[in-house]
Length: 118
Length: 111
Image (cartoon, rainbow over all chains, first blue to last red; front, side, top):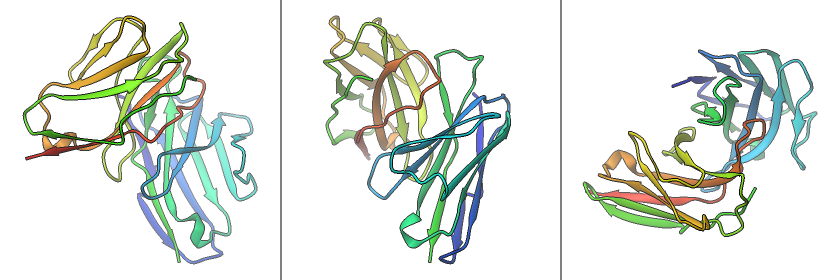
């Protein structure tokens, strides 16, 4: 099946710094990628939809200036958490859509990035 | 997307079949039932999906009732590696929108 990678798998940073998380589709071109966040013992919550070559669409309550998303190519989307604070500590997961696969396995998920802000 | 209801947790003995139910009484005619699972600290993994016919693949079987208001995911011979949170998601067959995850069912396979 299709593979989506994320880098880094885990990151620890100091409060106030910025962290960039990469999401790559390894064997297909993804016109759309999604970013989710998951807090401990909770379900995945959609943060934003990233479309190649255009601005991301953010869900209500997600600050676009804090969570910068760039989808400059068909295989790479990046999420930058700017001025991270301890409450941003979470598990960030991306998924990518293969437009040529139709509905089956509509989205392929990355392994996730665990962010800990001290 | 139609709302789904799943039991919060289930136990299953290793080697036995695990039957995970999902209620989706408000499902509309063009909406599919998808199942994903999430093993601890990993990204979700696609399992199976269906519209109205029962479906089977190498991972599981999906049984959808005739009125489509509920479905059951069957893992025929559960192993310890099947311990995960299983999510039942109902949505139309377009991949352009994100998946909406509920709270899922935490399946614990016991040795």
